Image 1 (tube, one colour):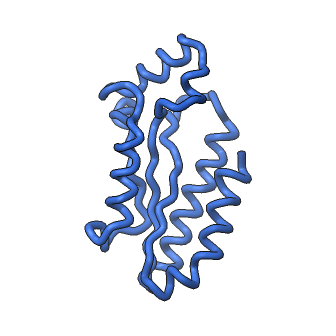
Image 2: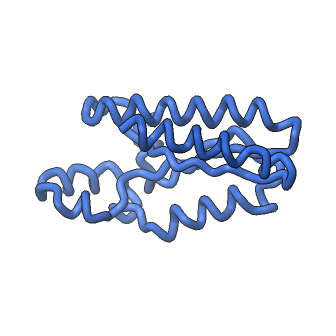
Length: 139
């Protein structure tokens, strides 16, 4: 899980950085919104926390050089993996997202597009929750 969620984005960013520095590019990591009180998926939460720290540290390091680094944090999306889950798990996941149940892939793509675009030219080191309202339930 750490190889996919942390190492891959780290090495990809590291290899792309010379190009990003020349072009004043943008990195948009995909993390996830995981309810803070959830004890499920501890290793996943740990790896996403590491990815969030990578986002913050890279944003801080490269902001003065014109490279922006942000992250989108979607809640549970309807995928083959979630479809394979038992119905009670699906119902639980839906209940944590008050707006419309599972997150649509298009909404995640739109958030990534926004953060990568010139519309977010002054945005770096930020996290955009695409979570159907899950984050407000925990406040």
